[in-house]
Amino acid sequence: MNNNFLINLRFSLIKVVFYYYIKRRKMKKIIAFAGKGGVGKTTSLVLFLKYVLENKKAQDILVIDSDPDANVADVIGEEVKFCDTIGGKMKILKNKIQSMKLSPNTPKNQLIESDVYTCLIEMDDFDLLEMGRQEGEGCYCFINDVLKRVIDTLSKNYDLTILDSPAGLEHFARKTGRDVTDLVIVSDASKMGIHTMKRILEIIDELTLKFEKIWILGNRFPEDLKDILVKEVENLNRDRVKLLGFISNNEEISKINITGGNLIDLSEENSSYQEAIEIFAKII
Image 1: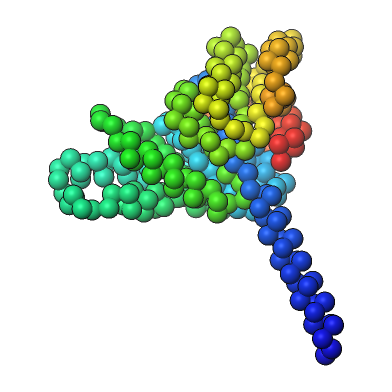
Image 2 (image 1 turned 90 degrees about the horizontal axis):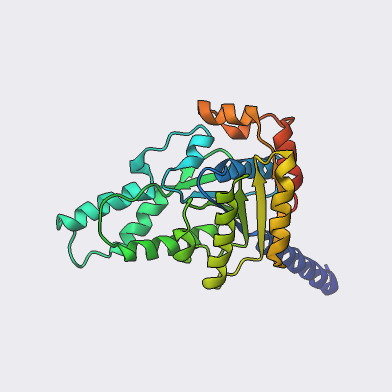
C-alpha cells in the first residue's frame, strides 16, 4: 500500500471527523418558552417537542421544566412525585443543614450536583428534568448558583434543550436564561398576555440578555384578533423579534390537557398541530 494512498485516506478520515464535529456543534440549541401564566406556553412547548421528535430534528433531547407547577409532566401524562424533583431534593438537603446532620466541612455543592443528576427522568425519546416547587423560607443563593451551573453542564450533552420557563419574570431577573439561543414568548388574545410579552422584552434589555432569535407565538387567537398581535410586533420595531405565527384553539388538545393524556400522542392530522408544524419549521 503506497504512502500517497495512506495520506489521502488519513486526510479523508480527518475531514469526516471534523465535519461530524462541526455538524454536532451547530445542532446544539437551547430553546425557552416563556409568557404569562395560562397563555398555553407548556402546551406550545410540548407541541414543539412532538414536531422535533416526529421530524427527527434532534437526536439527544433534554426538556427542563423550571415551572414550579411541573406542568410538562402533566401534559405528557406522566406523574412526577415532589421527591423526584430538584425542589424535593433541595428540601431534604435544607432539612439536613438546619438539623446539623451535615458536617460544616461537607462539600454541599457536590451534594447538590449529584442530587440533580438523580432527578433526570429518562423517557423513550428524551430526558426530562423537573425543577419542582421551593418550600420553606430562607435564602439559599448557593443552591441556585449550583443549579444554574449544573443545567448549563447538562445542556452541553444534548443536541437540543427545551426549557419551560416559570409564568413570572423572576426567571429572567436571575439571568438563568443567559445561554438560551432562541426565546419563544407565548401570548394569548388578552391585554395581560401582550403586556407580559412587552415586559419580558424590557427585562431582556435591562439585563442585556443575549438571544440569537426572539419569537412571538400567538396561542388560541380568534381569526379576527390576529391583526392586533401582528401590529403589536411590528410596532416593537426590533430586528431580532419576529412573529412566529398562530396556533388556533383546539377541542382535541383541550380534552387531552384536562383528562391527563399525552399531548405527544395527538393525531398528526390535528388542525392545530398542522399549524404548529408550519411555524416551528422556522425555528429548527
